[in-house]
Length: 189
Image 1 (cartoon, rainbow, N blue to C red):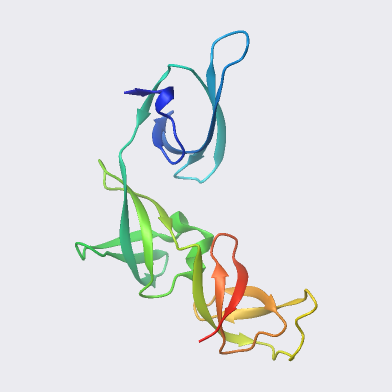
Image 2: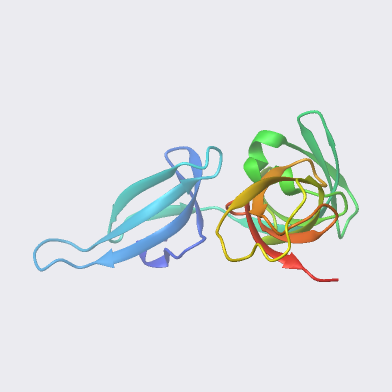
């Protein structure tokens, strides 16, 4: 067992029977009283953020996790099918585990899956920060309409709908930020 001096960002711990990832931490040594560690923990099942304070020296249960590279194969109802890039084994992950970024998954795209090493249970699916997708439908754009900050709806090749600037047309490729589902820039070919 480790103690609070081993806490760092990204560390996965077993806390109150659930797996949590440490998002943020701060060691505090007040003038009076014992030192403590103020943390923000993300529940790996629900994604909720929890604030918690550990007294300095308290034992924490660190869990061993591995990041593995997988390729997205296809979607079948509420199941997403992935293939391990090293062993070529296929795994199925529930759409709810991936959440909102799943709308930007394109067949053949590589993702990182965080796996609990002891139980082989997938914990999170991390898409690249930016993906390049083609626009399949949007209203016709107007040349020179780049000065205003006005947006219109556009449907992407994955079926997702996002807001894009007025000058973007059908058939163009754009870079999409998967973290906030927003248009980033137009991609020149």
